[in-house]
Image (tube, rainbow, N blue to C red; front, side, top):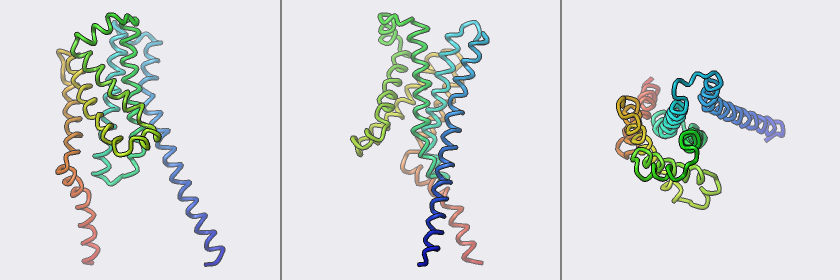
Length: 231
């Protein structure tokens, strides 16, 4: 093969790799901006005195709400990949999951610091005796475990056990919805919507449903292939 052909091919591969790297960097930047915007908006509202009559309650609610949104988004990535064939989306699952943990940690920290002023006696009493706080704390502990073991080093150490461990996100999500449902008491529409969406995303992981999603994705491609063959 002539040297100039090899050089051209190498340049083409380099440009493709460089382009893919730029797309991934742009996607990650978009996730960072999108995920941090709610926190920045909450800070802005606080500086403007726009958090209402009970600002601590508003901060608690908003951080918890966005944590559940991002947790739900994390769960949605695998079904979206199976349904669309967009495999590279999995690259961003860890980042979205860490942002979910970030907001839920802000939610928990607001309770510890601003609501309870680090009065550990009352905090421990709340965790032990108030069911909605008990399940919320349990969900946060599960997510803390997942966040700490989300690095490449832990993936190598745990091997096949890593995937089994990270299925705890399903339980953490269910406990998070239950925490929200028990907290709101009267208007339960939002936690019920979260519960329905997360329930569907968990259902999408059942093998029979996975096969159905694969058929939905491959069906149009097969029909297109037959159409081309018949022409």
